[in-house]
Image (cartoon, rainbow, N blue to C red; front, side, top):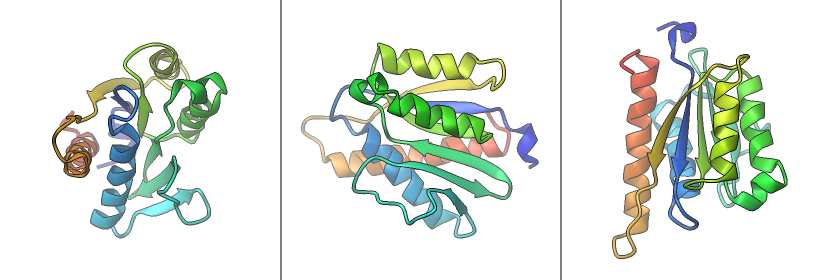
Length: 159
């Protein structure tokens, strides 16, 4: 499918602190690279460090996908997360996956970028998979696999 036929979409993973948003985004990025060995990493220029937050831009067959796991209110107050998502939008990503909290500045900033007439993104809000008693690593992996399926559906025009 031609990359210009994709509905430009921000997938915002929302949830409270320590509910797996960043881990899910990082696992999604890793899964994409594992499933699509021809995926080209455009940013950062150095190898991805999954130990902390990430801001990654990849390209698969001409389709740009951005990942930003930065989504704490303090990061937004510093402009960090907003700048990262803005940078991915300016880089002409067709799909951006980012983290937000459930309400407040983090969600407003995503809405601001999505509604900017220069970008014109749809926003898909997805909650993190969280349970205080279930295995969080398994939940994060399942959420990542779910996101990969959504990305595939966007790419082939099902969404």
